[in-house]
Image 1 (cartoon, one colour):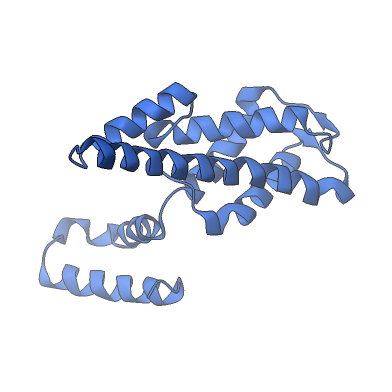
Image 2: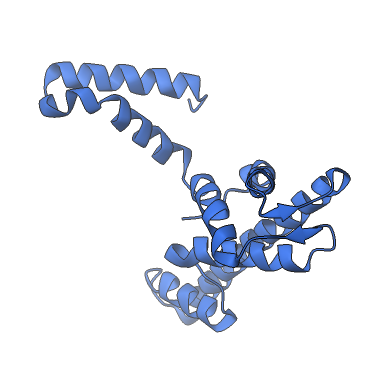
Length: 175
């Protein structure tokens, strides 16, 4: 799972509005943009650090003449040394960082929820943001093809699959 730079602003806004809607935090109307910027800063910093870890691991592999299969192992070790969650730990790490930021932000008036309650709102929003458009497309196709599950692989199933995929690709502007 990874964060996508182009979705950070929208995701930050969704997190803020989600937390306000279920009354877990209180933010003055004129401070909402500032809280969004705080949340964005957490995500942008994570993206920056993750990129730095990837670049450093590639440099190490190159300097030591290792095969590029070692890059992921080195990257995981670098992340572990910096106490950064990557790969499967990305979601939990970023959620914790957002919660910590909310606790210290001078733009948040009050936090009414416990960390686990905040997590229940933030995690699903981030999980959706961290799903690639292609994965989202595949899940939507599967959902729409459910009625033909028994005939999977048949000619009618293949025709319907291609039609639905083309329609969704056009609607989501993925082509």
